[in-house]
Length: 594
Image (cartoon, rainbow, N blue to C red; front, side, top):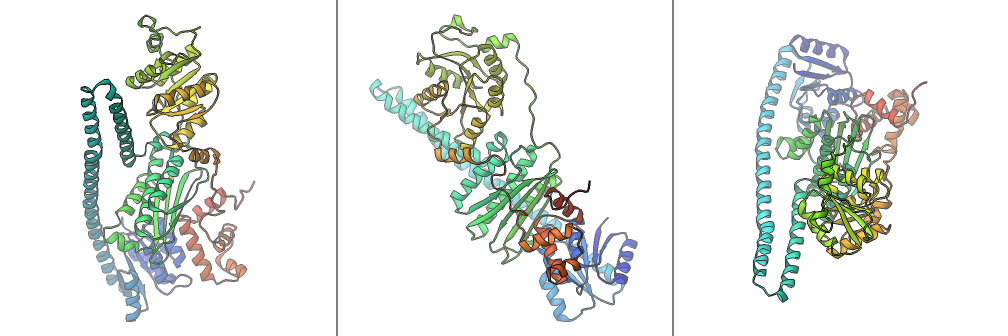
């Protein structure tokens, strides 16, 4: 059933139109003023709106302007039903985006004909928009595939070819020249790792899965500013916990797309991003003071695919998404994502492996005959367990460590279960553990076995990974690509009770991460993006004051109060009075009666 919203301040006319629409099989909703009409339009998202022009407070022209600035209502057909039939009035309405103009007195036949015509045109336009969007998505997908293919061919394949040539040449070189070729192969390998990680990060930010939304956003802002010179002002109360993966993905992509639009289409040098979690929702706001744009025109032209994708992500999760913009006023992106599950993920206890698996995990120490035996009472100073899912990595680590008389590798593990069982059984001095084994492996081991020092091993050179490992209890963080000497020094530091960070990590960045508060690092202003006047009105509204009372108290007009009220509802992403009350309760603006 099609929904039609009627905004009309004359009770007799409103009742007549609603009755007529109900008789014709429509779901009819009425509003007797412009402010209520805007709120209902954003709440029920009607298929068509019939609106009077001359109304107290917000008139029909202002209602239309607000509707066209909002992504969710920008394409809703609007018919003016008014006694103002002058040519200039009609032209002004059409210039603002009205779809039709019916003058009073009207006939039911005339009104119904206008409604059906506009609904049919809307369906045709929607089908065309979907075709354009589908075509554009295919084009974007093919362009991305082409870009990745060229990058693989021109960068990755070229480096691999160079590496193969060096290795082939090394077979025929004298031992005196072999060292130089191996150094060249190492440099090519390091470059290959860097390019591969870069390409992987472009396709999907692994940090989002590993560490969560906040570290991923912080890292993204750093790279975004480096690339675009646009500074991100980020505020994020209550964002330190983990959210369901679908929520984290949608939130990251919405912010990423919004920032991309800022960099592409504005000339600003800063953008404001705010995220906060309430009891039942994650809210997102991205605001810039750039040139702004015509939302309806962007959607109609088929060039608003970024807006469509953001809206689709929110809708698929049962959330809400809106963009308000207009030339000269900047752009304000708002998303609301419902939290349908607990904020923090939990991990079920991992059962210990059977004895046979434990024995198999203990690797040879000095000879094949000693395999499956944990060495105790060895003369070695530091007893080490290696935990990495890749056999080749463990073999390489063992070969490095066996050349150092102060180290003894007493066991190897390929899974987190094996690693925990080995630590419990062997009580090693140091566990070298790959962070890829399990998301919280460091935290689990450090809590259960505080006497075993942990050296986290990772392929990620991002400071956020090192920070998280240290916070979970690791004593050191080393990169898999580290030189042998660096790895040996890392183990010495960790075994001696010191902390260690891989040399390639920026100490300044680590210092920033370590000394930034874990909670509410950059708290929101008292009410986010609201002006001081809007905050005043917000407090009075939730205290039960009427518009006329607020106007008298603040010495402003009732129309100004209504405008401020509509603006604050839009900025906060609120649609109903119930939403406003909930917002006020969660922020302590009003107290629940005992």
